[in-house]
Image: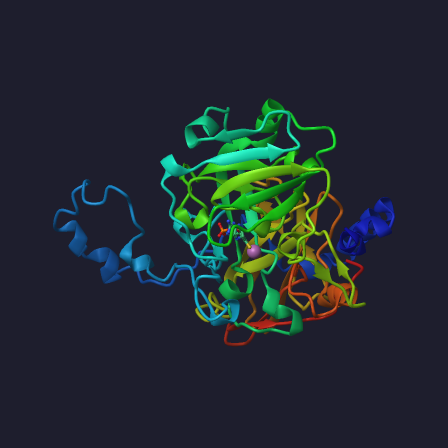
Length: 445
Ligand SMILES: Nc1nc2c(c(=O)[nH]1)N[C@H]1C(S)=C(S)[C@@H](COP(=O)(O)O)O[C@H]1N2
Ligand SMILES: [Mo]
């Protein structure tokens, strides 16, 4: 877990950090004066009072609409055809079985991803399982080895919890420089949902773990099986065995009928189409099981076990797909985005308008939950001048998002995993938004 400490504010004394931070905000008070609270009136009026679209009776009001039994499972409006997952050849190995479909996070609202838009990462295609045929075996270093049917599993008391999930390869192509002028391809290997299932610790209390059980192997029943090892400590903490997502059964793409949820840890540990949990006193040493998601360091050595999705954030509005080209000089506009940390809860997000030389506090809006997406907001009056917009999140474990220089000086550019360096958008005079990489930021803020 070495990498975490590199970006951990604990290297400074906490009180010193806090006071220098206060000082900083005092010093930048003048600069901050241009920033307005989210409560400021924006009044972005663009239509005339006699606009025919409001003066005339709409065609859809002149006839009956569809009968309520037309769609017994609701679908998005046909006008929302652009809000879809997208895949890209850079993330595929020639076909789309072992590949990814990325979440349209630029269109995402709030802290929940609709089930049809949740990102998909399959290694051997999406399996379709008849729930009657589904079984879960729990064995190895347990007092009582068991095989559960779905009905058995659902007899355990259930819980619903909101968590994000992020593939550690999110942003992978960005390590060597900007690759996409597109947020969905840059950061769309993540989503968030309300998961319903049983806490794994509830099952493990029932079957009884042997004292020397320290590792858990989770395996799926799909073509890839995705075997992964997880420390028992985590399994007993907040891991869930879930069958529902946002109030309905899991989608096939998310592992129907049952998957593992490992909150805040790498997406690949969240085994879909779960079939087996095996407990052991030692890690498994085969290549498939542990060597895939190591963290290559600059030295050429790799960190073997590294699971947490570190503190991260990105501005989702504006972004390359949602520029400010419709804005006029002097318009009020909300800068908005998502922050998340697999360690815990987001404590704050700072916004920079000048590529990281000055930072100001954004407000966190709505629910702020551990290991969940957290929305942040910062309203400005745009003077029509070019900006370099960046966001920087902190979490309650004292982590702060690193600059690109800080991150690459720690791990080099050969890594493809766990990218959490600050993302910068360049807004030009036309209001277009481009993905640029600012390597260095003012560290003091
Ligand atoms: N059985 C199985 N589980 C799996 C995978 C898989 O291919 N097979 N992919 C893993 C990876 S790498 C990730 S990032 C997450 C993605 O979950 P999602 O497809 O629901 O977004 O599932 C993980 N669980
Ligand atoms: Mo993944």
